[in-house]
Image (cartoon, rainbow, N blue to C red; front, side, top):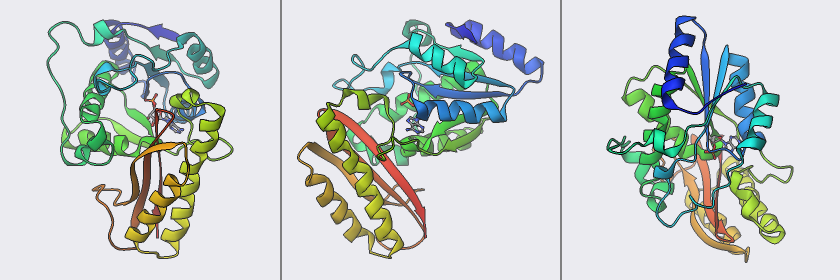
Length: 281
Ligand code: AMP
């Protein structure tokens, strides 16, 4: 596996790959890789000649009081995992080369970015859309792979690709979970053993809500149950949102039937955890 550390070399390399007619799959990440990330890499491996994984802890998607500084960084470990998963290129630029002095452009996707996570993380999706756009320009992938765990992020990227006529095929991959259902996340390591145990309440709440959706319980009632279940866990410090949403608009659903996004954002031991399930009835 080759490691590339500057945007200019990445661009040269992607031009060469394009000229050779080789298809490129991109998996954007912030590192501290786990099986969820590696699932995307393996999927990209099946579909493309060349798999590029980016590791970049993107400062512009973190708010002022968020965990940018303490976000785990462990590139040596990540490199070993990526070699095993079959990646061809690791693109790991530094902040200075991605945002040089004078950088002043950002991508704003409207509508859906103002809901759910966007209500609590006002700069987040603009930071995400901007860095993903930049990565697309640097890597020029044929396909890009994102995890359903960050469902709203997948909707934002999908919308950006469509709205800006980008020449990238978007691929959403299923959420990879621990054996007790907790969605894998680089942030799970911030939890104490007690916090880790309490975090299982998130997937349990989603799963029982999914049963209620299937049984035709009205969404407002399900939302109430979800909030009650989360609040019953003493280590859940804040429930930012929990409910039943339309997967396209991300608005709260009022009536049963059709597609439902069950989504939760909660804070446990100062760690913000999100998870979701999408159900078709
Ligand atoms: P991150 O490093 O957290 O920015 O995540 C990089 C990519 O991996 C994003 O597309 C995430 O949605 C995806 N991802 C993170 N956790 C998981 C998971 N448990 N299962 C599947 N994909 C995931």
